[in-house]
Length: 76
Image (cartoon, rainbow, N blue to C red; front, top):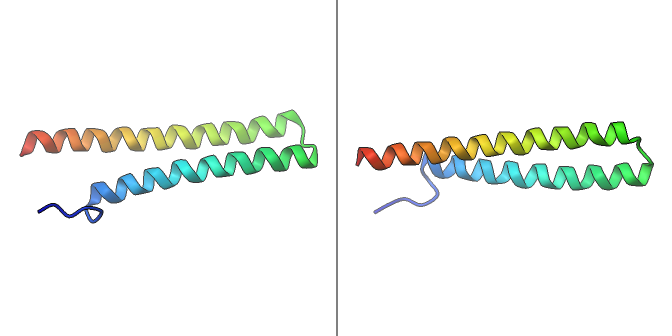
């Protein structure tokens, strides 16, 4: 019987999901705060790029998890 949520792969998937959600919330909040305080476009672009890097890292983590699961399928 498989243990759902207790394997290393399940934890890695949860971390990737939390990272994506966290970056999304961060990006929305920084956009709203920047608009409220009248930050320059240059400052807003800096935070946009930081969010883009966070999403890129989350995508990379998801890809690595997918590859690990594909490799596990071949071992069984």
